[in-house]
Image 1 (cartoon, rainbow, N blue to C red):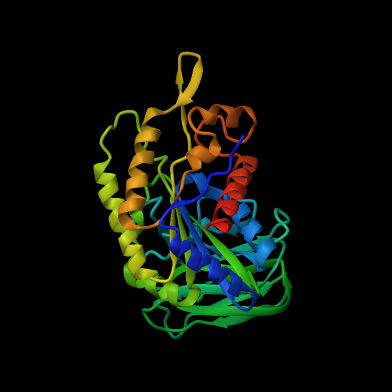
Image 2: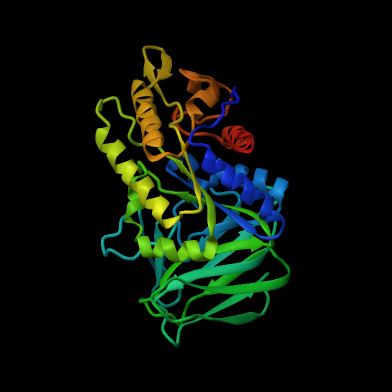
Length: 367
């Protein structure tokens, strides 16, 4: 299963990214991978990260939200937190109180005794340890202290900066870190904690930002100024948008609303990330049962055509994952080869890896 498919659309900006990749020998190069449940739990992203890090350097899983709903399935990092002591909101749960969301579309507020812990795992060769923990937040007050322990060692203190812009406080270790536990017991509920990034040295970092159940249009609900603050600190060179499954529906034939909204999202992203290349990944195959057979959901092709128009009208790059899977009715083969799950929509780990390998090759072979 799977075939090589080149990237189309405006590939000139991807060449900028390839030039930046060559600078990974002396600085950090960052990729943001936004998607829906297709990359929930770091599926596809984990292998993309592994591919780039093993070729260009960098160790660590990169950005992690403070609280998340995919911790039971994510294998690239073991993420635990005491749920009852956090109040959190996101683009994929609900945000009834209208809290300020961070770059991952999530935010968490401490109720007093809150803690989080990240343990490195042996899932990939580049996820086994890290040396730097970067904490991102805003609205801290003078008395807000975060305490932490590395590798279950002595408790130390991390000073937070005050102010309404997104701030960063770093923990740096000379030795490899395989676990970090952070306690937020002296922080008031005013502080917005957006996430941490687990890193080690120069190279490439690929951040996994899954917004489950979404078509991609929700990215516009992340405040522009917050995105800009993050860009100053993280400096993304490539933004991948991996959407489509959640709008492909047999009941719908007109997707003009989606086209218009996604064009706005992409144009807004261009303003916030002027130096980043943007790559839209077309919807992957999804099968529906017709009689005894599983065939491509006809709406997948409709959405795919809309996405080609979106890429064209916004002048960004496009990769056709539907074709890379093998085109029409390919999901059935992927399920039979254990590359996809029996919901005929989502990928298994091995399917995610195959897709990530095809995508990596397509990016590195842009002419």
